[in-house]
Image 1 (cartoon, rainbow, N blue to C red):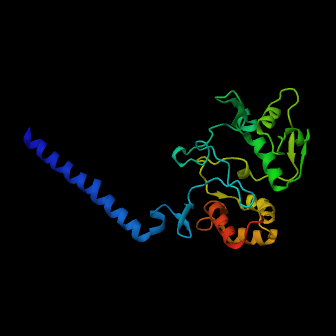
Image 2 (image 1 turned 60 degrees about the horizontal axis):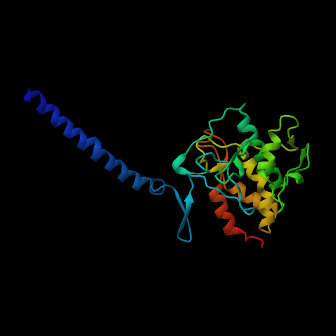
Amino acid sequence: MLKELGPGLRLTIAFTILTGFLYPAVMTGLSVVIFPRQSKGSLVTVNGKVVGSSLIGQPFAKPEYFHPRPSSAGNGYDASASGGSNLGPTSAKLLHGTTKMDDKKNEVVDFDGIDDRIVHYCVDNGIPYESSVPLDQFKDSQGNLDDVKLIKAFNDDKAPLVFTPKTPIPQDAVTASASGLDPHISPANAEMQAARVAKARNASAEQVKQLISQFTERPDWGFFGEPRVNVLLLNVALDQHFVVLK
C-alpha cells in the first residue's frame, strides 16, 4: 500500500508547487511587466491622488459633472455587491418604483424605478416633456422633486401619472447594467447632458461636446461592442479644462 501512496503523494506535492505557486507567480510577474496599469486595477490619479478606477463606475451627482448609469449594486456603485436589480421588463417595481417605511416610520424610496429616473433626467438636462399633472405638486419646500410623491403617483391605480419625454431618452440613462458598476455611458447619453455641464462650467455646449468626442472609445478591434464614453475619465478632463461656475 505504501508503494501506491508514495507516487501519489509526490505527484500531489509537485503539482501543488507547480500550479499553486510557480504558475501564479510567473503569470503575476508577466502581467505586471506587460500590463503594469491594468494589473494594478487601472487606477486613475489626479495630482498624485487616486480618484477611482477606469473599470469601476462611481456616483457623480453634481450638475457640473456627467452622470453615470444608474446602479443596483448594493446601495449603488458598491463594488463589493456587484449585481443588477434582477427585475424583468414587465415588473411594476422596475417601471414605477416602490416605497417603504424606514426605522423612524418615515416613507422613503425603496426602488426608484425607470419612470422616476426619466423625470429626473428630463428636468436635470432641460429635455422637453409632457406630464399629465404639473410637476410642481411633487416638489418639496426647497423646490426639489420629492421621489416618494412621484413614485406613489406613478403607482396610482385610478389616475397614474403619465410623463412622456418629447425626445427619446438613451436606455443607459435610466437603466442599470447587470453589474451595477459599468464605468461607461453611450455618446448619446453624454451629449444630452452636455448643455447642463456646459452651463455649470461657464463653457459652450460645443466645447463640452468636443471633449465628449475626444473621450469616446470606439468598439474593440472595430467591431466588438458599441462606442462608449468613460465617465470618470471625461469628468477628470472636465476639471482640467473648465472651471465650475460659482
